[in-house]
Length: 505
Image 1 (cartoon, helix red, strand yellow):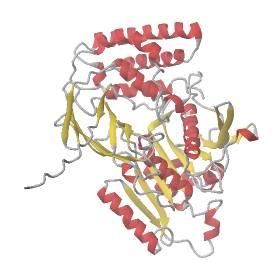
Image 2 (spheres, one colour):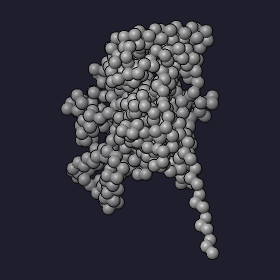
Image 3 (cartoon, helix red, strand yellow):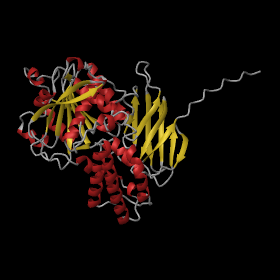
Image 4 (spheres, one colour):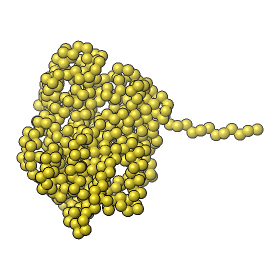
């Protein structure tokens, strides 16, 4: 994979798509930035201090630094030195212009800076705009090369100078990405076209096996398994590489088993997606739907005689409505009229269940009005696989008792309390975690308190750090909202076993 500036970069290793970013990514640069820290340490009041010209200048410097970091040898080292000096000078100039402001306090400013970094070098008008184009993204692991096929649609008016919302469309078993798009979002529907062309759309084709130059390099794909989800994320990473995408507006759309996969993926990695359209499918697991709280919304789409029409379907809907109420998850239900007799088979296309194509307008209108909240005040996260899934929004689980085979899960509910300038954590099976912080979450001019299971565990001052922000943003290079300036590490004390009762007498 390559960055927009044409240097190789793998977002699965270092980014928003990764499980654990590499700690060494910015190591050669961090020492150089130690000198910069003093430039932005003055106490501030308010946000939004940088001018448009200052944002442009800082974005250009950071983009050059990212490019230089990817060049090996002495040429790369010289590039890093030059880019570091340019960024230092740009920060000095900004500090001089805003003498009473702490530049790191303004999260919104830095979100705009990194949005411009991510747009840097993107092609204004790629080939194939206005039509569905089939392609593949390759991956090499342990000497084997395999890949995943996808179909991508860029609207006729696509312009890489601005950011676009993205739809990741997932087909049902037995179909593929191109067929699914042709049967749903890319139907020859004049009334739909104007709304559809507000989005970039990518449809991964996840079959029973990956593609590969050699038959022996191919891998079997079990639906809902690690390779399946890796393939979807790999195709998503390719869309982010090619296009200027607003990462706060990435939406999932799916039908049947593709819809289950979409809902599963959003629940396991809620920090990536703004919303999910689920066509004629229920969740594989209701237990993890609470992970979507405060971040992603879900719309279930069906017909009056389909998903919720049976006795079991009625029970499922009641259970989902209970999740909606008790867990505070944004769930919506769209039920359309049953098809006329004789039209059911034609409605399926290559999907195993009805994709309810006449709901396309409702789905796209709903997508258009939604954006992910990168800094929710409260989060819920349940996971039984810390090797793959351990992070949501501003919270990451480092250690805990999670074992799918044994039926053990780590369960976390956490919130920020601005009045007390505190983080409040309630947990089961959690041993240690990290809380990422910025001034949208808490006031870092004041000490931060941490409560675990209603007991105050620590109180500490979190210093804003330019090193930390740059490193964090570079570990999440395609997410412009990845602005954190410090963290708190928390070790959960073991609960003491109750003392045995003393015998009387």
